[in-house]
Each structure stands twice: as structure tokens, then as C-alpha cells.
Image (cartoon, rainbow, N blue to C red; front, side, top):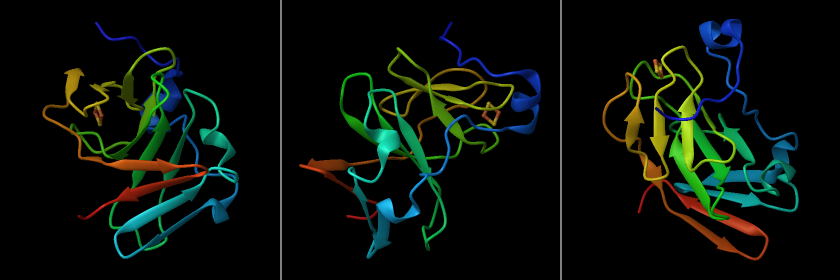
Amino acid sequence: MAETLQRNIFQRLLGLSATSKPLDDQCWTFSDGKIEINLNLAKELTAIGGAVRLEKKQLPENILVIHGTDDKYYAFNNKCKHMGRRMDPVPGTQTIQCCSIGKTTYDYDGKAISGSGKGKLCKYPVEKSLDRLVIRLKS
Ligand code: FES
């Protein structure tokens, strides 16, 4: 059984994710199929285990960006394969988990390892250079 992120029943019922949008909305841009994140401004991603959810700005889908426990960055389509709710990283593990009751849990490859969701999340390549992350939604 996968580790569980501590959330109360109301948060689970309402599908409220623990991960927020960046406090500084200027920390990221999206154009020509490419997300760029300025890590100097995206303070939520500084520490291992940190995460942000990116939404709007003409994005074709919502994106979850995490600073993994292996010190690498990952980006996923933020839509659980069960019923489409958002996800959060589970502290101290190399997994992300749906915020809903079903708690479908995925590994860093996006593969469902427990819960009602089946299959694989769409995962996007993340390139890091100095203080910048680049995520390409299309190749
Ligand atoms: S929507 Fe994710 S487990 Fe149900």
C-alpha cells in the first residue's frame, strides 16, 4: 500500500489539492508550447518536496511541477486517471497522489501504483539550467 498524504475528509471529498498555484504569478510564462519557470521567483520549488500547479495563461492543460525527493524536477498533466482531480507530491516518497478520496498514487514515471486510476499520467520533459526550468508540452 502506498504512503498517504495527510488530508482531512472534507479536503478529500471536495478534491482540494494541497499544492497551490505559485505565489508570484510572474515566475512562469507559456508560449509556443513551452513553459519557462524562473526558480528565483518560484520559491515553492526551492526545497525538495516542493510543488506548484500551473493553470491558465493559455495552457492547454493544467500542469503539476514538483521538486522530487531525488532532487530532480518533474512535470505532469495534473489530471488523475480516475476522475481527473488534481494531485500532490507525497513527502518523503517518490510518488504523487490524487487529492480525492480514491488517492490514486503514481510513481515519478506517471505510472499508477495504487488506487482507482489506471494507466499512466502524461509526463513532460523538464530541462534545468541554472535558475530556469523549461518544460516542453510539445516536441
Ligand atoms: S479522481 Fe483520482 S482517485 Fe478518483
